[in-house]
Image 1 (cartoon, helix red, strand yellow):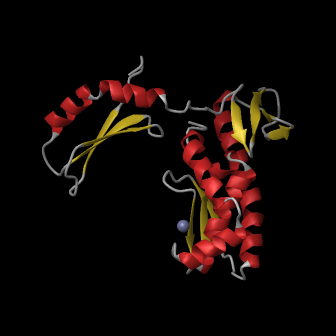
Image 2: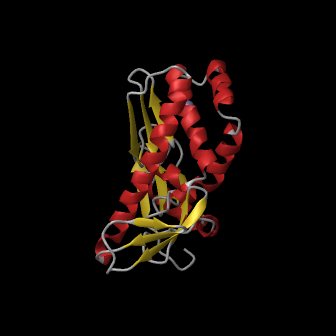
Image 3: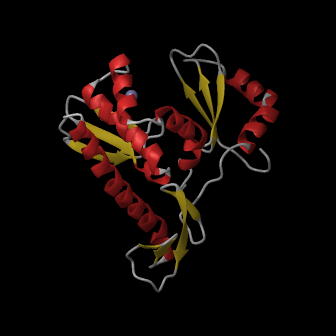
Length: 225
Ligand SMILES: [Zn+2]
């Protein structure tokens, strides 16, 4: 595909009626859903007949941004240049728009990722706490993960909120929109009119932020891959 070879991942679904092709930038693969039985021959034909379409989709994929020396990372609305020098200390330090990383090359990616997770936590924890207090709810726990399908989730019963650590790669106002959305779920465990009224109160840029994530979210998932 455009000079690259892509893996094809086929999964059978009991409920699948039609065979579906889905190029997935995050997995770096073409996903095929098949019904419970049969369909392999048709899937191969479908792949063949959609070569041009698949190539066009893959050409639109955002470029992966590995955590290596010289990479420019999106970060908090700006960019950070990963600047690695083995002689430096193992502690990752930010100096303006550079991220100074030391130690053996093999651990650079891990150290950058841990630094980003710490930054994400340092931003999201107080932002969430502050909004939760403003709506008079107790926040029991904020956790960070790397889910693909969502930027945040909330369990109103336990008072816990989960975020994608990748929100630290987005501009602050986008991240804060996700915080407002999840905190509003501490009050309303649904997407009803009351929920949206509270979101509008907590965040004036909710729609804009949703569009931003729709446009750039996929790219954020390729950071560090
Ligand atoms: Zn929601």
